[in-house]
Amino acid sequence: MTVLVLMDESDASRQALTLARKFGDPRSVRMDAIEPFAPDALAAALAQAADELNASAVFAAGTDRGNEVMARLAARTGLPFAANCISATPGEPVSVTRLRWGGSLLEEARLHSPRPLISVAPHTVPEDTGPRPQDVDMKPPAEADLVVRVVDHVSPRNGGVSLAEAKVIVSGGRGVGSKEGFAIIEDLAGLLGAAVGCSRAVTSAGWRPHSDQVGQTGTKVAPDVYIACGISGATQHMAGLKGAKRILAINSDPQAPLMLNADYTVTGDLKEIVPAISAEIRKRR
Amino acid sequence: MRVLACIKRVPITGGRIVLTEDARAINTQHLGFTMSPHEECGVEEAARLIEAHKGDSVVLTLGPPEAVEQLRDAMALGIDRAIHLQTDGQEWDAEATASALTDAIRADEGPSGRFDIVFFGNESADSGGFQVGARVAHALGRPLVTGLKKVTVEGASVRCEQEVEGGRDVYVVPLPAVLTVKEGLNLPRYPSVPGRMRARSKPVAVSTPARPAPRLELVRLAVPAGQGRRAESLGAGAAAAPAVVEMLQKAGVL
Ligand SMILES: Cc1cc2nc3c(=O)[nH]c(=O)nc-3n(C[C@H](O)[C@H](O)[C@H](O)COP(=O)(O)OP(=O)(O)OC[C@H]3O[C@@H](n4cnc5c(N)ncnc54)[C@H](O)[C@@H]3O)c2cc1C
Image (tube, rainbow over all chains, first blue to last red; front, side, top):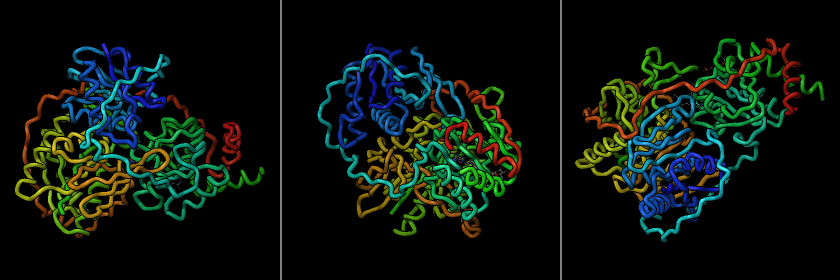
């Protein structure tokens, strides 16, 4: 039995391969087989290869690109698609466990399908260490499948530390109180070479740009230290913190969910505590 | 110009998710509801486009009777009218949802003409299926661009910026098109009091489609085990600063 996998060079692809092997011997379609990126053409290539090989299932990494191509494949083949699975067991029906709410909730589900389409949530499954699967032969894409394709790329203007890659993040929530209130957050971030983050309450109020927002509908971060100042710790904020090594919560409410889910806490008014930390760092230099 | 925004009612789960006894749903007894932030940006963009180009803006949802609250929220932001596909509160899978939405779009387009743009959130906040927009686009035979942070109508086509690692990829596709958007596309306005008043009398067309058997069938939900963090108190107030600095030194970031 053959299983088809949409592959690129990422760890997430090799994690998808781990689950795919349970469904057969893998063959691959490469994400960069069509350049510039044209997701309908990739979906068409997967549909055709799946038919030709009589594939038992099609897998991809649950990345933006992976989910996008699988959704298009699902639409054109009229098959159900289970996104962001962390386990998948062959059978009729196939049993899967998948992430909901950006990872704050797990769903056990049955996938009733002659050819299950499954994406694998990144960093939930070990990486495959076996040989790279062989690529399938692809026909040139049809004109209609190239209507949607990348025609240009623009780079961000801001030269600051990128949130997704920052080693340290000083993040502020509604408790910071105002746009101007972020001066003390920025000062501490500057001393630590950290990126500034924030909660959705802050972006909705227009105090910070959305590119600073951490969470389910913001950026997922993975710093060594995340300093959360005046953030309550709603599940949608915590969904962005799964990769954080250490969390320090500063909050006036010792029962705030973030205070209960942190590694370190300081209780009290952030408007006194944050400047005191900055002063202490300066004093020791 | 005609623009449609599709939205979904979801609970605001707060600090901890509590499930119903049969573990097949979130216990929403004490929770408020909202549309997803992604979808709110789709609604805002639709309202802005119609303010700029004139025409007809519509909001569409499949959901329980109470989802009319989210339709009214969308109309308070400036959308002209609403279509409500009412359910009995049971969840529909993505395939069935997309097919009901497609039927509703076709039915509305018959007398009124096609939508130049149909907006979706990139993924629903709760079930996170990442596919309803793609299925509707395919069924309607329209180009789909996903994960957008910027949308600019340029004559008969639309320029789209999609967030990717290290910047944004640009697509230009002909209208009519289906676009899925992410929070950050714009900053949705705060609904004004007159906006809310007007929303109360805007029309909501209701129908009740039949729910097909799901092919992605939910069995049960579970709250994942915590990460085992055990908070260590470094103290209270400004007096905790030395302990914080020592922690940062130990963590190797200072
Ligand atoms: C579908 C969906 C997606 C969402 N996505 C995101 C997301 O990506 N990111 C995100 O952050 N949110 C997201 N949210 C919103 C989320 O549910 C919360 O509303 C939001 O995170 C709350 O922000 P906050 O913690 O800053 O504000 P609040 O919940 O109001 O908390 C403020 C905290 O500050 C403390 N405080 C107040 N004053 C002080 C002071 N002087 N000193 C110290 N502490 C103080 C308070 O005790 C409180 O704990 C989403 C919501 C939904 C429904």
